Length: 180
Picture 1 (cartoon, helix red, strand yellow):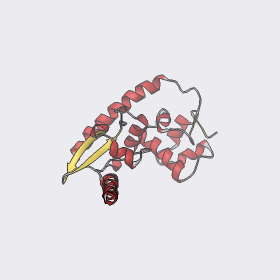
Picture 2 (cartoon, rainbow, N blue to C red; picture 1 turned 60 degrees about the horizontal axis):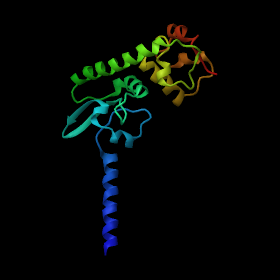
Picture 3 (cartoon, one colour; picture 1 turned 45 degrees about the vertical axis):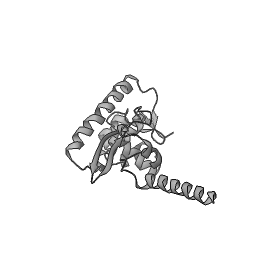
Picture 4 (tube, one colour; picture 1 turned 90 degrees about the vertical axis):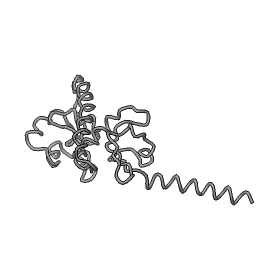
């Protein structure tokens, strides 16, 4: 008689665990973090937590489970910032300022290191792309999305196919990028 009880307790536990992951709080936009990892993050990992109809809406995750800033995720969030949906639009400016402060600290450190060799735009991470002249989080995000959804870059000139990269930006970065 004990076995059915154990099975039902275990099944209930699994159902509760799955429902937490599948129906849990809204967790903002993420790049390489799984839904499970996002659900395990504390609220302090997010730039802001809003409450709507008793449900948490957690915006812009940028700290890992240990509370350490994840710069790659930060850039991803900034690159997608306009896609975030807010309960109170007034919070948008507060969050943007908070994230920009983190980004500015990263860029201050990153710009102290000179680019020693061209960046391969087919493999570069967001943190590398934003070190290119005239490339911020939005353009870096678009470059990554382009190569993921359209194709890898065959020539450096092909980067002009990315929305927002015109002749001026291309001329600023052409000596700093490669496809090989």
